[in-house]
Image 1: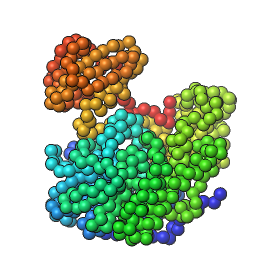
Image 2: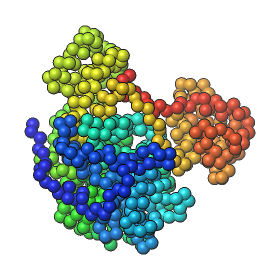
Image 3: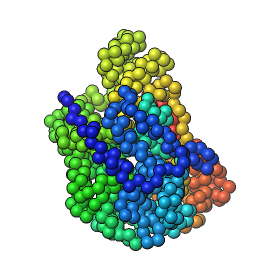
Image 4: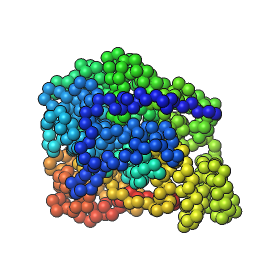
Length: 602
């Protein structure tokens, strides 16, 4: 099967990526208050050179495009900060200042981007903030553009806070750890390491935050005027994020597609982990956007990559993006209904030539292979229908048995060397994974698997595949590079219920099986009371108006006291009524998440 490739002589994307440049960054780095570098513009300098053999030509091209950094004019009164983080920050000028859309991941980068904008456009105040969706690279830098207590509208789609917390707090530790592989943040920058993520270069390492919206967008067609600028919204839930929206600026003839239509094939299920997205509805919402907005827009921009100008090009772009997700959805189910499993379909399915030739449909961030498996998973789950798959041994026990069947670890390594020499890198990695899990102390096994990963990375067009392979190789050779959890100031935006939910997730069930506790919480600053019970290893809470009668322990405190308690700062300001040992028991059954768990070793 010969793959259809786009035209490498087509320089349209480069022209679009450079169009409207107003100013380059004024410094080489962005730093935190303690002097730590959280973003370096010099990290991408190597991309100015010739492509090495260690990087797929399509990925090298995409990384060159994503490396452009500075302030860009999209159209009259609309500017973007690009290359200051994984995502873009958009500034829409109004009557009195600027509306900020999607303020990056970290406060430091958002602040630096805003300063660059102001050096060119004057010291305009931020008059409103819009979060297009519930991923951290689109809201995390909010404290870099809003001062504490700032009284400006903050808009977000319905479900924004709930979905932001679910992803970044409830499953935050696991996603952050896998995100180290996904973004390649610990890799050396350069042609043998990190060259990008497909969406941008990588994620900044500054301070993320979260604020609650003051105005919720619930309906397609909803209009809001912010600083004298009219916004018309389209709700797109369960597309690229569970809570997401596009918007049209009819007076500027500009369409923002959030992260629903960018210059690559996106993820139906991101490799860092997330809720499986709905490719069918994603395609439908792209079609709806085309019908609703395309004839009213002269430019289309998004929260990643560069804009698309011109009515005909906008229609073609949206149509091809629509067909991309629709094709993956429909053809996966067609083949599933013929009896193929997700893994089999990933080998069978190829895109139509017209889509394969479109640069913006290439798999730099998502891939056809893992997106097909995600569509299958959404409908069919993890089970492939073969009863042999119902009760397989876990990885270590499986590995021991494979090694035994092949004749011992030395025989497995010899076979692995043979597959590596023959260029069958995929099976070499499958086989040598068992060697590492069966004999984790065997340095030859780790090195051979690292070599397989490294060679797979060098041929990968998908940046996230490359980053996963290279990070796996790095950890096999050097161990896990410990990283601090980057919760930043997000926790302050959680409701009491969400804090309690995050505690319930940490309860060590077996350790708490025999405990039976009842607590009454009174939050004096909120005027709220909650009843909490621990039974059968399950922590349950509910809002109540009842007094603390029958509770083993009553606590009178503020929400800030609760956050301090959860972070281990003590109980100085908490008034206790009843048995203080109850709280000690509750805290004793909470596990601490491990942000450095092993992935490529047992």
